[in-house]
Length: 251
Ligand SMILES: Nc1ncnc2c1ncn2[C@@H]1O[C@H](COP(=O)(O)OP(=O)(O)OP(=O)(O)O)[C@@H](O)[C@H]1O
Ligand SMILES: [Mg+2]
Image (cartoon, rainbow, N blue to C red):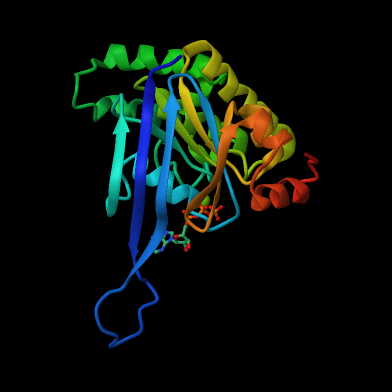
């Protein structure tokens, strides 16, 4: 603990305006993040919460390099942060078997060459981490349950041992018991490997359960951030109070 793994300074992220009217003049841009700043220390679990459209995914995609149109600074101690998405089905190629999908990050690894044997060994290690039987390597995504598919997505993200994992609503598409299992898996990975995790959720109960720190966003801005315990016990911003109340959590 202690070293900064991620520092975001005054981040503004822009999108092209998709609903531009025909024959309207210059492409106007939409600013989805406005001056977002925060820092994360090694081994932390930081939750990002806030209503739909506040910019959580936009922030995640800027950190992993998908959103490139931004100003401000994103410092990262390590390269290759990995992301897990909400919908475990659409993020898996349905035409490929689980074994192939897990191996893919190694096949395309530009930093080193993995032999077939090394790839197989790594896949087996990861299957143990994500608690799936090896027999599932031969299946297609459609032959797995939603929870199993999300385990595979987490596994793919872990293949190259990232130091930072960004999970964007990773359990929202799953039913409650499966949610709990996936949360437990993420917590285990965190404990065992000390991976720093950014956990995006609109569910403040889940956030309380998993995170050390929390950042509340609204309309592209950071409204409040701090230790999860402190923010939940003594929220400063009215908006945070509103969210906690709406979730049935009393400060
Ligand atoms: N590709 C895009 N082009 C234009 N606008 C976008 C694009 N993606 C997102 N936006 C807009 O940026 C804002 C932030 O969206 P974002 O997806 O980051 O929200 P979010 O907090 O992740 O919401 P949710 O909880 O629903 O996932 C929204 O107003 C959204 O409409
Ligand atoms: Mg989102």
